[in-house]
Image 1: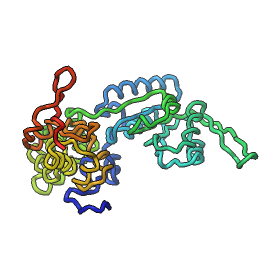
Image 2 (image 1 turned 60 degrees about the vertical axis):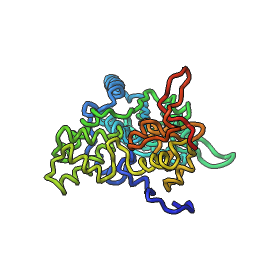
Image 3 (image 1 turned 90 degrees about the vertical axis):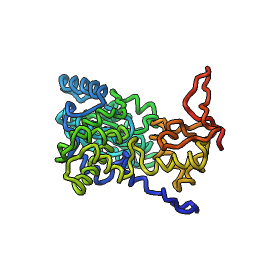
Image 4 (image 1 turned 45 degrees about the vertical axis):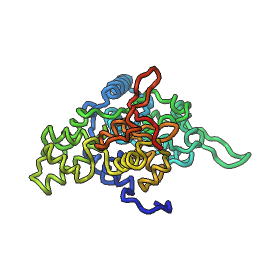
Length: 367
């Protein structure tokens, strides 16, 4: 980081975090082996699975390509896996690309013109596609046709190109960024939710079997409880616990061994890592629980403001440990309790919410 401030002991590359939901090269290679192949093997997302199963079964009975599918939700929940399952259930080939890779309408035209009938086109991060390609996609999705522009200026002509029926599966972590005309062209939209601990425990057990890791139910539950509701993180933690168990023990993963391993990797019982705790500690110890501005908080932990806002804060807010207010970031009662700290006397009384009820946030008297 180039901020002009001294390097903080907390400063790190967000991509190196064990609890990030982003996939690196190792994750992508391992996930390919761990991914379920059929819808009945997919764990969790019960409502999306049931709805998607109906869409696919109806399409098979009609002998036609199913409606286009949009999968939205945070990273690491199985959007790419479901796209591959859709192709497998339809016994159709799949073409995989991403929004950032399509910067020109010609890039998209080349992909669309090479599709075969019934093929599944998976477009990851669809919200990051360029505007010209996006407008071309409207016609391709609705009419299975694209107009290829030949020439420039007044002499340019549009040559219509017919496309075979295909199914577009779009994936996005930010559905709100999709323009309505594009969003409306999807026949089915499935929103992926964070996993419950019991579902993640099943994920860990399944992955342990595929990785030939001996694990007991308590060990799987310990890993699941620290996985932030995300299967990708659960699988990553399982691999690190496996390493610890094989090097320092006999290879069996128990609750005690899983807890010891994740303590080494600085992932606590609630799933917070070093960066998460650094943000909370700065907020509590340096600023008395807040409110404090984002930029000030970022300087205190030696990170860019964008890193704190986009990498650490979403999970802290979801866990009820931090709240965003117009005056700045403030800690909740749960944050003080989680770090084992006692709030200042002036910050102990929770704010009164409208109607006289208390909302669990400490008073904003600390600056």
